Image 1: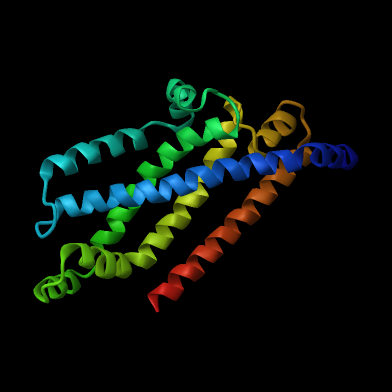
Image 2 (image 1 turned 30 degrees about the vertical axis):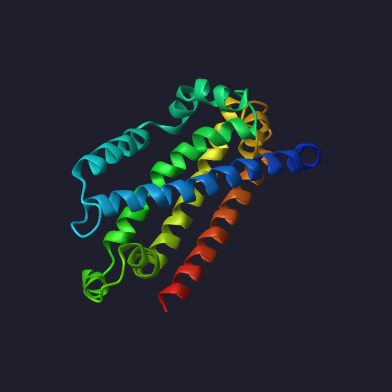
Length: 220
């Protein structure tokens, strides 16, 4: 069994690792950038000293809640027409990155909103009283004070995407998860399944450790 497992990994692992890297890289970048923007808008539109727009907050919040309510595997299937319209294909790691990005944006946006709401109101009041512009307060006060929470949210989002990327293999996304499903489940290669599980557990632990260390450093 060990020899067969090593042969499969030697043949398939490098390609699968690259596919997972593509999926995670694209979805993480888009998720963090647009998730941060959406989270900021959610917070600012609910704050009386900034945008203070109930309609913007309600519409954006509703859209985000709808996306978060859909199980990922269903979201993948539902967004296939959009995926094909954007990249001209429904399979492959880049195609899988489309639903992953949508999921990451909605997920991180709520985490960003929560982190911003944890900022001490007294700090914002002092900044506003000093006469600083609102854009300056957002950039140099709000985001700086919320930085540890934003990093922790980034870590949670990254770890969630690792799990979702494994699921995307079921719909042609490829990646490390696809090896576990194709060989470990359908072909009863238990060694491959165990290898993938151990690898993902170690990778998640590493990401969590690095994220906590980064956030703790910013807290000090």
